[in-house]
Length: 217
Image (cartoon, rainbow, N blue to C red; front, side, top):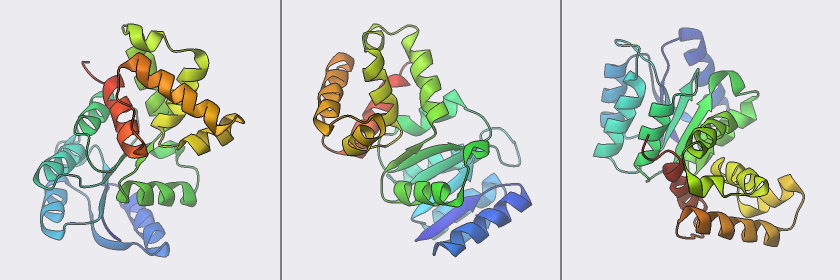
């Protein structure tokens, strides 16, 4: 699996390269700036891009804008974002596209190698890997002015948060120690209250929910 990695801090970039290579990823390119990232994504066509949001020369949203441009040129390009903070605008832009694997992890909340490697593999396979704090902020800010979300029960909100992290019904059932049938019922209620079409495609339903939660801000 070929990875393009963009991170401007040398020690972190070098550490990520070594970690990914140790888990049988091929590093197609490891770059430190926006222009280098844009070239690598255009020329190398990786299986997944792992990008920091803020890269030289602007140190604003350079990394994510390069990734979004690459997704426009190559729809569905899997992108895993690494950020120091929860950036509401960046999450919205990434999710608005609605196609291909996406992830948003906070650097200081990646606690072990397996967690990170699993996230890269999941996104590369077309899945979703979202940090719970990102989901929590999307939920809380959307709830303030949104009546459908406010109608969810506490249990439904808990299920929604776990769903948005990319968990299947079976995984949610295991986490909450209830039956999978109970989770299926909660999920159906959530989709009905949010006005979303029910889907058996786990990634599609996660993207639909996240896009809804982040719509219109």
